[in-house]
Image 1 (cartoon, helix red, strand yellow):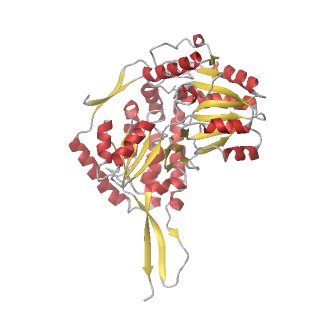
Image 2 (cartoon, helix red, strand yellow; image 1 turned 180 degrees about the horizontal axis):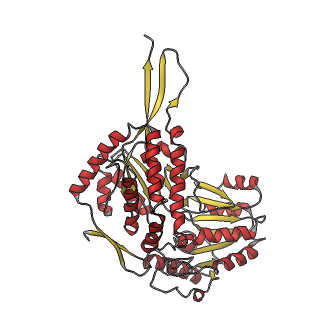
Image 3 (tube, helix red, strand yellow; image 1 turned 90 degrees about the horizontal axis):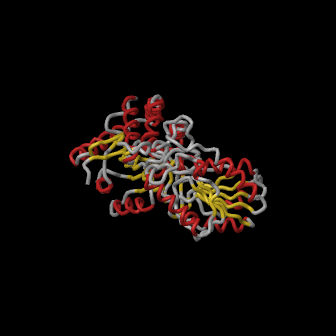
Length: 463
């Protein structure tokens, strides 16, 4: 095994970042310092924590231009869209800070003569956040800022592809005055990450990544009796009803399927369209896809960058080829995207019709710029197909009938249900999944519950 972490840029296959792995001795010091820092930090009031973390967010946002360029080189996000990652980080952070006073307040219970009783929300201690590369700031912040606001310390292990993102966060927060040892980044292999989870200093794990990796996290935590929050895969569906605004639905669903080159856990990967509007929808959908420009993410005109690596692109190419061989029809000519090249991360977008659930592209997470579209004849058929998946992160319906949207949503097994939008995370709502999309919750007031533990106070005041 290599003794260092290496980030190979999808832009040109160059070595962009290299860092030595954290040594066992340095890791021991890191964990000890986190415990020490947390013991002091938890004594600060929520208002004091909010003031410091507000400055941390300011320092982070001030690095926007650098962040945008680094994102492009590390994971291929076009510079045209990089600022959105910073904006999302700021929105989620400031929202979670704004609700912390109320969310972390003592739980009041009915008065009882002669007693004072309440439930206090205690921080769990040291939180290990293991963050992914596809949205390296917006996913990491879901646990980092709430954990710190709740009075915890945080150890961050970022993905090898975007390790620099973790360094940037830690650097910005330290500059803003966050106490030393409270937020640190570790450079660790998967094996070392498992050992960290088994360390007695770790009290909670927040993980975002694949299903197999999520299983490995759970295995590492066996016997520790600590909480584990898992946000895993997705194969998120959309249903376009007969009464939908076709232009709005097509344009937004293309964005939901193609943004970040389709590398989003809540991106749209399969679409079911009522037969009455199917032809019009598909026509408009293809028109919008053909407006994309595939190319280097450093180019300001690029709207579709490379996938994270050639292997990821080849996986999607394989799904497409298998579907076509099984009878699917591809509607996008790859020659319309000159940057598309076999054996590289540069992959043209693709839209497939005449698909069904016997095809991998309709059941297996793609994580790339491809989507399958199926014709349906009723709401009931759409619900059945949407639920025919091992995943359940988000799902959406496109309709002008809110009552119908709610009725259908009640039948779809998913963590978030959208009407007339998709691929979005509202920090005021719980971010959660069902089935193989994971378990636990981040963001919203509910997100604070896993980052704290209840402590009951039962005080007899009359003797």
